[in-house]
Image 1 (cartoon, rainbow, N blue to C red):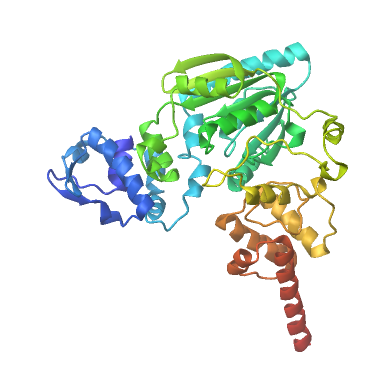
Image 2 (tube, rainbow, N blue to C red; image 1 turned 45 degrees about the vertical axis):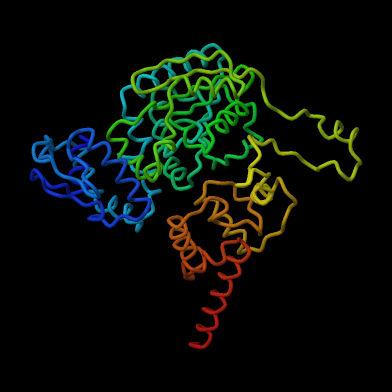
Length: 448
């Protein structure tokens, strides 16, 4: 399957001895790294052989079976887009929400994943019957809801309260759409890798992480987030691929830029994940190495929370002026490239906390309406402060384009995309909208 797709995608010659050049697809630097990843695999399969700076066709491409499967037909509709990604002309983030080839979609369709989710569903049903109340499940990096949909379809209505956390606003919006008719109570929240929302700390009976923890820059931070989410008696159910399937290598390679080099490949064995889990304070680790997947069930050794009387405790040791008004429990301290605490990122974290957790601000009518639009697109609370920025809150170029359309519908003005990039703050963007409205009103007054 993967040989077939890559042969067509790269337009490899069928004639024995024919030469194929990497620059035939005009890749940028990252695209070239992706091609090297794919070509290394094709060499191992005997499809091509490396020679100096080019590749020689072995003739295998001419005899590769070409079944008209649904997956191959779907791949052909994406070749032009994937080649544009190799050239750096299209954002690879669209792959995260691909209904067929995103890593989460491929994982959810895998037999091993289905069996694991079936086991989890049986366990959740058992807990529900024992407690007589809904089980709180939080999914980390839930992508577009592929694993959520598969699990919730196996559970009776009313048996769970589900929260999906995802770091991509676009994927989060798709998850909301995909799960709209699931029949279950579901909350959708944008994931910040630095901290767990206070209302979710120590709340989960089960944290689900399906091929999700390796997406963290430091997987230990994802394990720390899971431990902060869990009740003292909760469980982390996690599954991680130990290696990529050939088809998954295609989309994962594009998303990760070919990993740059093999050392950046985030996939690790079950033994490594066990060590990471133990280093993060998990105990009672059950590991099942099922085929390509490492499946672990973990329990936290202690629960992470701030004491209710933290303020009075600090007041006993600090002058009154030095006692903070509030504390935020982080999964880790962000560091600069020099290994120092990244204070700018901490300030940005505070600026981007929901406004109800900071000092209250009075927004203008335009700012309030614009904040609602941001909240709809980014999947976050509409309590947004004036200083907060669209891109800092998780926006990207694709969502910026959609924002322009929403602004047109809500305010009856057209905002140029460059204006969104040059004035991404709530206050500045609202001011631009009001300026456009005033200009329209002046023009209409002149006509009258």
